[in-house]
Length: 309
Image 1: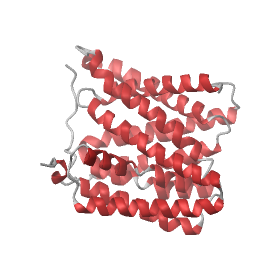
Image 2: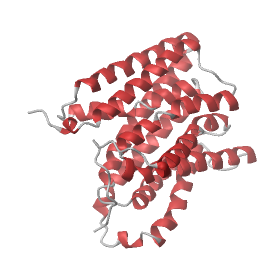
Image 3: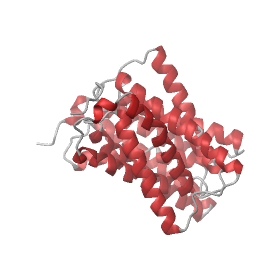
């Protein structure tokens, strides 16, 4: 049997200590660079996502083999199914979201892709779980915010509106990734899960690149450095540190912290890309962030897990 680290219950809200606050701050700064740096890369988004995940799996493999090798004893193939499914959803998330960064503003794309808790909450409702009223208020607020962003982007160009749709699709796929990943981590350690998930994601993206005729090498030195920076900032600093504090502060606090990626990405895009979202879209972004925050905070109540009679 594999071992897993003890985790704070999903409904718990734990005040972060100084160490956890510092780690989450670094993680949010890391993921805030993801969108703007990706928008700077000249090569295909499939190639960016492939190398980001392949490098992440390769860097975590020594941790699994050297420090957590005992967890591999007695591991069965069926226990890896959820990790493989999570990897496929993650590949779909990157394939949808990354192209949107060049079609609409980084700030709008980032705001819409953080609506993942909205879709996981709806999936919970369809599975028979009762949602408290504040969750529905949050859902409504986020939908209004997304509509405001789309309404502004349709006046900019149809391409910008298509970018909004891809960002939302990326959020939906991220919801599948999170649901499958949470099931996988019931039996697997973080490193075992991440290696399988990232490897599956990289393999799926490699197949997609082969079918689409997209090269995975032969880039300029500038693009290679940007891909390395994306891997370091978003994959290692961002996701790894958030997974590290997840067991001590709980998913509610981590989910709220991730929402800070929206203003963070906006500021980074202002500096690196000299890109500012249309002024009329800002209220929509604020509504999306507040709506998702309300869903996350309200979903932290134990009553959310009560099934409909």
